[in-house]
Length: 514
Image (cartoon, rainbow, N blue to C red; front, side):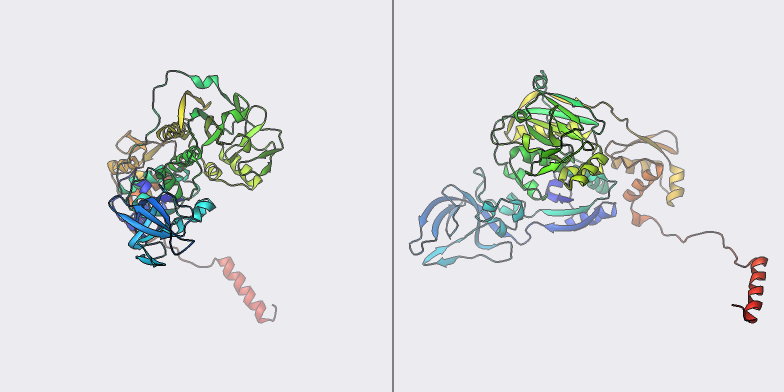
């Protein structure tokens, strides 16, 4: 999993160097594979606004641009075809360094001096695979509200460090920025920042006038739906796009980008339906006798009754936990959306994805297991973001079908057993503090026994041995003293019967019997 360090720092105040942080995270059980700076060599590239474009007097394919950097103006000669008056672009000024390490200076272009150059995404060191072809082939055009004279390293997070974390199958809770933030906070013994969600007081339940939800199969433990009116569908704000790009996800539009951002942030996959395209006022989660569905990638998929589907009561509109259907996708004409935040059985999703040969960001998370408690939080977080960026207006009310709420597990830990089992000596208060850092709710029920309430996002914790491992990784594996294996010494030797058998064999071999 790719983790943006800049994004992570919004939740945990990490002061140490990226390398030291990676080492600390690895030693606490969250293995860091690599640390990569987005564009390590880029320097001196700032934002500028093109105020004038003139033809080059001595070259048909070149144009001469006057660029406002906020505190001064420069002249840039370029052959780029996608620039225009009013465009805000990255400008490599005299002395700047682009991604491949080349230093930019003032140059003579057929008798006119250019004070630098405009930059494409490749020259900025960004991943061209995450951009549309037309964007990748020209100069990067920045949003109209971008401040002038700003260093692009800061603006586009080119100085961000991307942490590649290897996750084991049992740590499904770490499939998100928040999950890694919890690990970082526990490792460094730091507080974790809060997450803002939609919390407006709603006095009406308007959503009931539009939609109802029915779960007809237990492979869907919970289904949350929120509805919003679309104000506009356009490119997302730059800050949102940058977070997606540094997580390896391609920005699409403001609606889809918010669902992807929340998935990366919280670990809860979301899906947005075009309400009118559903052609129904109900959503039913069930198996279906339909044989085919066209998914969002415009491919026709063969389906059967073993696969869980999101339906409009009659026909499938999405493959549960895997991918949405093209018959309900968001388009430029979308005016109402249904925001789905659901939980699906991991075995069901894994089998469906395997049968279809289709693995997605959503299915890879559901396959490992997603905390059902996230569904409501994620729906409200996405709502808040869609309001914040001005993409939508809220339809009051929330549908939350959650028939079987699982109680939180409680596991007792005997301190004397722990110390004997691990081979160290910790007090009950020390162990309680370490477990509390890992977001367990811990209470003393005697001088030697702790009652530990396991949070819903830690389904891997079942036994006292699991808790012992949690304490040890925070205490530090390298802090456990090495010991020599012990045990009783046993004197070897053969039994009388074995000795007699060997004597007989020796006689027979001596007489020529083999």
